Image (cartoon, rainbow, N blue to C red; front, side):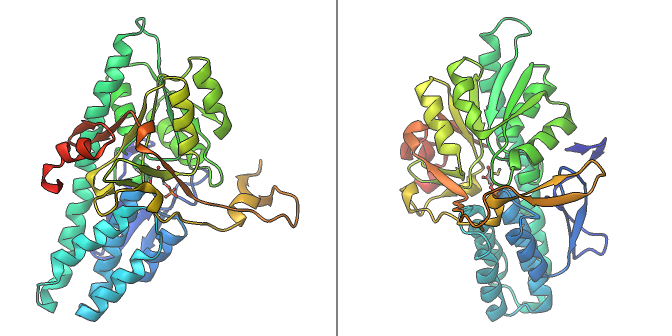
Length: 363
Ligand code: MRU
C-alpha cells in the first residue's frame, strides 16, 4: 500500500540480497522508520518486541529469520533449534508455526549447500502468496460490503467496525480485515470505519487509523468501550476483524476485546465477520478454549507512549502507582457468535463443515 505516494510492503529483502528490511511498527504513527534485520536474533527480537506484529507478518518475518540462521549454519541441528527459538517468540498466532513448518519442509531433504537459496526462495514465495491471498480475501469481503451498500440510499455510507490492526501493516500488503474496506473505497462505495483504539497497545489508534488515513479511507477512532453503544444506535452495519488463530470448529482467537464486540454484535443483529488466510487455521485444534493466550507485560497497561507538542515521543505512567496489572493479549470468540469467515476461497460459516467445504483437502 502507499505511504505518501510510495508503494511499500511491510517486509522486503535489503539491497545486500540477504538481510531484511521491515517497517518498524513500534515507531508508528509518529515516525515512519524501517529496521534492518541481519540475523535470526534480530528477527526474533523484532517479533518479540512487536517491531513486526500481526499473524501473517509474524510468519513471514520468522521465515526470513530462519533463512539468516541457515546462512550462519545450515545443519539439521541448527534448523531444528532455530525453528524452536523463533516459534517461542509469540505463542498465539498460529501463522508463526505454519511458516516455520513450511520452511522446514522446503529445506530438510536438501544437502546443506542447497539449503540457503531454497530457504530464501520459499520465504519470498510466502510473502508473495500472502499478498495474493489477502487480495482475494478483499474480493470476497467486497461482495459483502456491496450487498449492504445496495440496501442503502444512494451515497449513504457503510459503517464498518474493526478491532486491533488486521490491515496491510499486519500482513505483507492489503491486510485481511482491511482488504475489503480498501477495495470498497477504491470502487467508490462510501465506506466509513469505526476504529477501536485497542488498548493496551493501541494498534487501532496507532496503526489501523494510520493506514486508513494514508489511503484516504474515512474513519473515526473510538474507545474500545464505544462499539456496543454505536451498534445499539444503528451506527454499525458490520464488523470485520482479523484473527491470530481459527480452530477447525470455527472458534476465533484475536486481540483482547474481540469477544466483547462479537457479543454486542449478536445482541444487536450486526453481522460479525472474521477475515483470515488459510495460514491462520489450526487444523490440529477443535476447541478455541485450548489456544494458548499470550500474557504480556504489565507496563503495556500501566504506561502509555505519546507525542509531546515539541515532537518528542515519551512514555508516561497512567495508573495509580503500585497497582498491579493483568494483560492477556488475546481472547477467543466462540464460533456461534461469528456470522462468517472471509477467506481467500470464499465466505464460510464458522463451523467445521463450513471450513472443510472450503478446504476439502483438510477434511
Ligand atoms: O498482538 P498483535 O498486535 O500481533 O495482535 C494482532 C491481532 O490481533 C490481529 O488482529 C491479527 O493478528 C490478525 S492480523 C491480519
